[in-house]
Length: 186
Image (cartoon, rainbow, N blue to C red; front, side):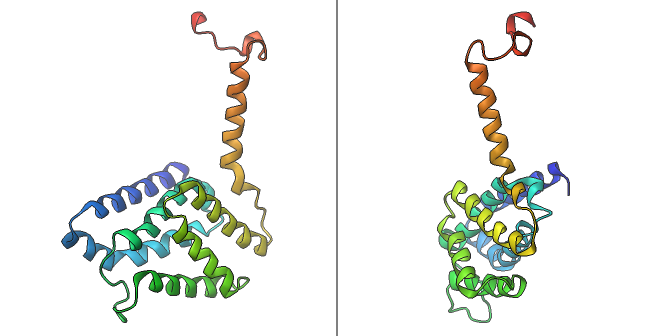
C-alpha cells in the first residue's frame, strides 16, 4: 500500500465511521454488530505492523483508533458478543483484543496489555494522546523484536523542522538573499 493509498483508506474508514455514528439506530446498530469487531481488529493489526505504520503516519491511525474506541462508549447500543449478549461491549473488547494481543505479543504480560487497551479507551477523544499511546505501544513491540524505533518519531521531527524553517523565514537577515522568497520578484 503506497503513501496515498494508506491515507485514502484511513480517510474512507474515518468517513464511514463518522457517517454510521450519525445514522438512526435501525441503520447504525446492525452495522456495528456485524462489522465493528472485525474493523477494530484489522485496524489494530495494521497499526501494529511496523512495515505499515509509516505508510500513513501515526496521526492517521490515532484518528481512526479514536473513532473506533469512542464507538462502544457513545454509539454502540447492541451487544457485540453474540455468545454472551449480557456482557458489556467494553468488557468484550477488552477480552477479545486482550486475547489477541496475548497470543501475538508474547513479550507482554496481562497487566501491560490491560494498560494498553485501557489507554485506547481513555484517549479516545484526544488524538495527540492516542498517537503518543500508540507510539509507546509500537516501541514496546519494536524493541522486543530488536527493530529500530526512530521511524516512529518522523512525523514530529518533520513538523519541528518545518516550524524551525518558518521561524528562520520570520527573522529578517537569517536567510541568504537567494533563499528568501520575495513576492515582488516573482
